Every structure is written in C-alpha cells, then in structure tokens.
Image 1 (cartoon, helix red, strand yellow):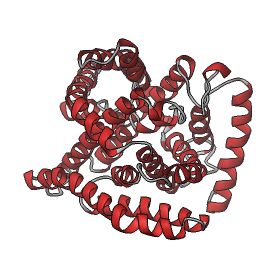
Image 2 (cartoon, rainbow, N blue to C red; image 1 turned 90 degrees about the horizontal axis):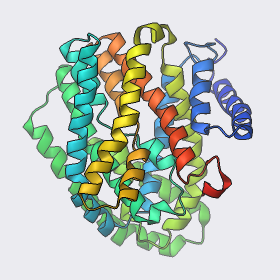
Image 3 (cartoon, rainbow, N blue to C red; image 1 turned 180 degrees about the vertical axis):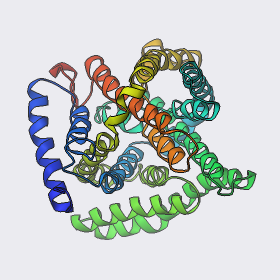
Amino acid sequence: MLGDTIVFSMFLIFTGAALLATAALMTRQSLLVVYMLLGVILGPWGLGWVSDAEVIKQTGDIGIIFLLFLLGLNLHPQNLWHMLRKVTWIALVSSLVFAAIGYGLAQLFGFNQVDSLVIGAAMMFSSTIIGLKLLPTTILHHQHTGEVMISVLLMQDIIAIFVLLLLHGAGGNSFNLWDVGLILFAFPSLFIVALLLERFVLVKLLSRYDRVQEYVFLLSIGWCLGFAELAHLVGLSEEIGAFIGGVSIAASPIALYISESLKPLRDFFLVMFFFSIGASFNLQYIHVVWLPALVLTALVLGLKPITFRYLLHHSKETKHIAWEVGVRLGQVSEFSLLVAYLAAEISLISASASYLIQATTILTFVASSYIVVLKYPTPMAFSDRMRRD
C-alpha cells in the first residue's frame, strides 16, 4: 500500500490538507470539514493510500489531550468550581433527554433493544473538540459564555467515562459500585495533587529557569502528559487529566506563554484526529444507515440547542448566552465514536448500529461547524467582522 510508512502517510495527510485548506479558505469553508473529507478520500475505504487509520487515530488523540490542557490554562480554579456546581443538573437532565431521543429513533427504525440503548447513550454528549476549536480564544475563554460551555462539556466527559465503564463491564470486565466510588474520589484527589505539585514544585522550577524557553516548553508538555497518564491510571480519561493539569497552573504568570507555545503542537495533532474520523468510516455501510443517520442528525441539530437554551435560561442565564451555548453544543461527540468503537469491538451492538453512530457524529460535526461559523465569532468565521483569534 502507498501509505505503509508513517512518513509517507504524513506527507499525504498534510500536503492534502494544505491543498484542500487553500481551496476551503478561498470559498470560505470550514477547515474541520476539510480534514474529515480528506480522511474519507485517502483512507482505507476511499483510495486506500493511508491504510492504517488506527495509528493515525491514536496520534490524533494526543491533540485532544493538548486541547483540554490549553483549555484548562484559561480557567481559574475558583471560577471552574462555581460553574460546575451550577451546571451539574443541566448536564444530567440534558443527557437523559438526548439519550431518549436516540433510543426512540433507533427503535423506530427497527434496531434491537441493546442497539437502541447504545445509540441513545452515544447521543448524550456534545463535542469538546468542535466546541473549543470554534471558540475565539481572545474573547470567550475569559467570558461567561465560554465558562458555561466548558463546564457543561466537562460534566458530560465525566458522564461519558461512566458509560464507557458500563460498556467494559458488558464486555466481560469487572464493574461494580467500587469502580464508581473510585472515580468519584479520583477526580477531586487528582485536582488537589495537581495544585500541591504546582505550588511546591512547578512554580519553583519555573521561577528559576523561566528564561530558558525550551525548558519551559518541555516542562509544560511533561506536566500535561504526566497528568493525562496519571488520570488514566486512576480510572479517569487522559483528557480530563490534562484538563486538571491546565487548571492547576491557570493562575500562574507563565500560563499565557505556555498556552501560546503549545498551540501549533495542538493543531498538528488535531488535523490527524479529524483525518482519522473520515478515514475510519466504512463507506460500504452508507446505503444501510443514510436515512436514520439523516433523521437523527436533524433531531440532534434541532433539539440540542433548544434543550440547552431552556435549561440554561431556567438556571438564570440570559437568553442570548443560553442560546449561543446551545448552538455551540449542538452536535454529537468524539466520545460517541468511542462508544461506537468499543460496543462493536465487544460485539455488543450490530455493525449497522455502530456505523449509524459514526455517520451521525460526522454529519453533526460538519453541519454544526457551519452553523457556528455562520452565526458566531470563531477563529475561522466566514465574515471578517466575526473572526477572532
């Protein structure tokens, strides 16, 4: 195969992305859509020039870790705690609503009970990547709108961990209340550890060697990936660990420098992630899932913003903020893909159910990106007036 070497795969991905991105910018299209389209074209189910989509996906997952780390750098711990207390019930109620929508539609199209339950679970979450990638970093990260959205996404990520644990249990691995207790204990414990290490270790190292930019760069990457791995060891996701690592140093004077220096690295891996989404989709299942995927996509895009708008406004948010957060969260999540992959791997659901989840995720990624870029300030808005870096 043409893509048997990683170097040649990188050449195809980034050269192809550069060419398509040029055309996309000239026609004011979303770059996120370009990366997924390129994956479909070059991946195993397209031309087959990049044959090992799993390696690309694993590399791309690092981009999510860096994205959550950089997100945490812009959130002060006190603000985060306040917002989490406020949005916990919103995340729980909205997740139940979206699960019911997915379950009901799956039943309508003749999927069995287990398939329907997993499809419903996959619809519960919104995309952390889409939501954060389309935030203008110089504006909303430091405003209330961004804090609300980030808090909802974080609570959804925690719910997603429990869903994945349940799937592991269904696949034959042990799962009991002890696992739940460990996760509930692990999150605050890891956060406390991060704050203590930041205060007594990291600050002293940075104050002593902050003039050596290369050292600051290496130390920040080690801090990010270290907490990602530590979180994984205690039963949380790598993404949440990276987020905790970022929040723990958000109040540090060096946080802004770290944020700016890691953005190119984050973008490199995110290109790989979105490429892998397109490359992983088996085009042979389009004729099986196209109708339920289109209907489910329409329901998600229409009902998610309305649900979040109602719940957030009920919690005393203004109508403008509630609606904008709802629109920005109006898609399915990368966690939905993990649910689909894992459930299919353990033979819990049918292949058609797995590809329905994948197709719906891709379609909502594409449509939601366009909607947000058209309506709100983003780093890649169609209008120069709305573009923010």
